[in-house]
Length: 616
Image (cartoon, rainbow, N blue to C red):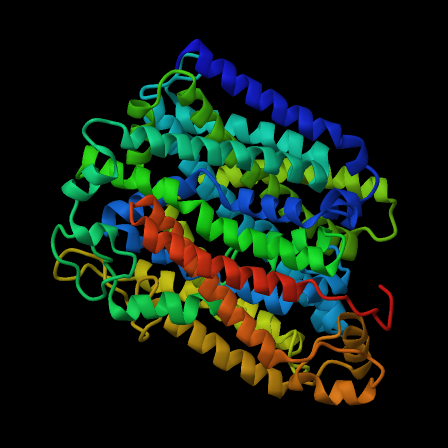
């Protein structure tokens, strides 16, 4: 890193903090401004903010690792989630916008009633605001520490390479990322959601420009030799888009997944597990952005733009760098580090600083959203709901700022306890397996009640704890490895095989809880139906009591659009890939089909919004 590189980094940080500070006064008005941007955000800004949040420091490294292990097809470990993203576009985006809630957790007391609904709201506020959020922040910090460690080997902070912080030993790279995280916490607590969204748009533009520049320069390295050189030096399997199932061949770049594991990803995970940015039913910060938009159409288009950008635009520069790293650094113990090593080797002065700044931007956009989103639960759904009612809006904003900073500290502490990003992914996906179906059906089946969702939220956590207990209590096996003390079929399988057991047990239990407990009160169901206007046969008894409500219809037609939309996203993803890899005619033809289909779907989405019977 030269003086020019550092000047670029300082300029990017200064511009980020300047943009955030501009919205400080607006954010101070109310929690509606601080957490929902005054519900005035246009679709393109809300959608860009979503995709910027998912572009974290860990994602390029994770893609490079997948490519090194399994070729291009390894990315199916996250490409499967496009199905859930398009489900949100067509089935849930309008419903979220109509609900008018401040957070997706607040929805539970709009949808259910009584003490069980209040308990569920409190449990989910802690679950998502603290547990899930801290894990996500932790793995992002862990990945950014890797970037510092590889880019600046032997780095020190104030002349020290080893530190003890809060009783935990850590290297200087981790300390530096912790300091950066506190700076992000500072601008997050000042700017509110509008400021975060605007800085997200800037950071995403910078991050994409840096990623594309790195891919271009990586291909220009003589040892790589462009796309032709990659194809000459790597096996054909490395460029395959479709996964090869079964036992992997030693040294071959094929998807190292059994049929059962691939079935878990494509057949279970996308609808059963909660994951940030890919929540069944469109929860989390995706819901936060939808709730911040100015209309139903903006809500729908925001999620559509997010899904297209997330799956079709972002991955290919990372994949190219991952393939180049596979040529340049074969056999790396941590293949994800290859991405940063290519940065160090390929980029000239100035561009290296730009890409490092892009990594900082990606890190900051994710952390700022996680802090604002997590704090929204702790303030709106825990503090204001149960601890301090009827205070002024300025009081709640002050509390929000304090908790934002506290959450930043808590997330950093969590990062020091994580051993790997992939392990944290598996933990979060396992601890929510089975919850997703309830999050989907609560919009389309009146019989789902608070006990259904409470069971689906808590039980996977208990099952994961049971799984961990089985592993901890295990005795050394014949190969001197720990074996489970007791075995439950599928449940004690390693991730993702455990999803079958956890999702299956959870689903059976929440169905029993649903029919063993009383339905939600008619008055609550009627009020929810009049406000949100969900369609489908699952609301038939409620619709009969409210004949004046103009509910959504044509669920079969919506399902067809979902299938078309999902196929279009995958077609665009593959089309871009074929163009990048030199199969221009095939890629352009596929992109044309995807473009025409998406244009038709967008036109159908821009219909006149019906006037609600009951204002919210």
